[in-house]
Image 1 (cartoon, rainbow, N blue to C red):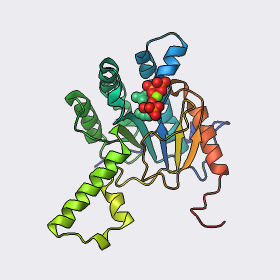
Image 2: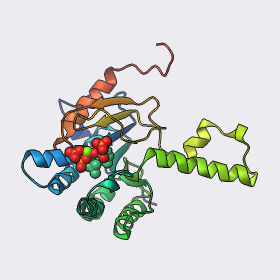
Image 3: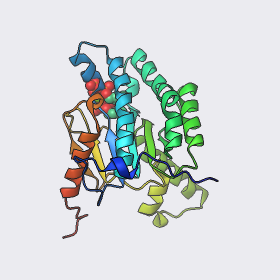
Length: 255
Ligand code: IPE
Ligand code: IPE
Ligand code: MG
């Protein structure tokens, strides 16, 4: 296998004056991309225009994260509760991965990005799964930024499925309840293989988690902004990372 070395992370342009220090960059940043609908409404536009503009913010943020040296970027794109929305909006959202990857996949491949998907395949239309699976397959050997899409993701469902799986093992006699460990649960979560988020960002001014990575966020730092997702850009990411770097993570201990 030829190891790809190209990435947006190039020495010449990563040191923008406004960029935070590259020491102590969070390894995993997870973003609740919220506010597409309100962004559109503010301009008298239909909600779907907001979702499409949100895709551009995904691209900008991916490049900025890679330049900063962030290793994992998880983006909450569709929750298990978002099925409650009107059918035409859900249909539109389901087309977006395909639309995004048709435009961006080649550039993601060239820049050594590894695409992953975290969520239930069940319930997603075949064109959505196919587009995601193609991206995952074609970037599987890349070892740059891991771009993890939380699609049809819900943390309670994830935890419930994990419990069922462990229950089956106990029933089959291959696992003893006393042998269950936190590390074992980590492995059964959809985020298996990805470290817990160091920093969780939510846009649009909402101060809630909306069923996102409940198990994994035990000691994540949180950063909220009023900015709607389609307006998010590298400068907000820099602000969030700079704030993260000023914090002291104690994990229950003392410094
Ligand atoms: C985030 O924007 C995208 C998804 C949840 C799919 P919203 O669609 O939730 O936008 P608001 O919150 O209604 O403004
Ligand atoms: C959270 O946003 C889900 C995603 C960003 C995909 P929502 O807009 O669905 O969250 P609530 O309903 O305001 O909590
Ligand atoms: Mg919302």
